Image (cartoon, rainbow, N blue to C red; front, side):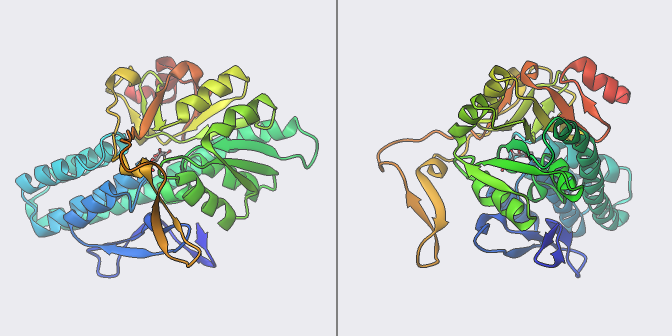
Length: 364
Ligand code: MRU
């Protein structure tokens, strides 16, 4: 997507052909900083400490990390060890494991001398594929927005609630949940987005709001707890969120607080959609609640909040007593029964084993 008048992806290969450049998301919306990463250790830190984040982008970043390892040491042992090192950076988003598995599957049969060049090529292909998947998700989701718009008065916006950031910053480009929104704006359909701030890391307030503002999408920031109230008053026409892992039974794991939005949506007959590319489906897991590992991050993320001071410094402030412990589960699971539909690159699937099998029969 464009920042100013320049088109950016969230990750790209540097001119040296060996490092990658990323948008360092820790500083947004206050500063737009680009970082260069050239080592596996740097890639691991960037994923763990959320310089890059969002399930699809985590996967692509890890794929480039494998390529960096292959440039340094293309042995089988190094391939296995980079898989382990990067896999343990963040436990919930399945795209990380998907990308690492795909790189290993692709590289293993090759002679060691060919692995580095092939790994960079395959990582770049995975990045390009992500863009294509998200564009297709956008087109499929656009049909839903068009349907809702058709039932409104001319010029009346479709009000969409979103949680966290499933935007272009969370992917390589377009985003998943935001892709239909961007395409709707391009098509001239009036939309308005309610952006959940998404405590504790505020991906909504800091990233989604920045994206919406940058792309001229009418939007309003709300606190995480306002969604139910707005739904009760008919202010929300639909919810679209992303996901870090969706099970073969259609359970949806996403940023903490998604489940509460789904409950409120069900109680108020508001359609609740989840946008996802197929690498986000974990075909090995059925019951999301029982089987998906939920990342527990530092309690400091709850107690200390990043912001920009009146003097223009980016700094943390404490919002709770020093002695108060904080717990920080980063994701939750929304049971399939609360999901209206899964917006995939192939179409809208029912959130159920049958629905996903019908959409992806080769996985059945
Ligand atoms: O902890 P984060 O910021 O990586 O969490 C991101 C989300 O929960 C997104 O909604 C999800 O990865 C889908 S991104 C297209």
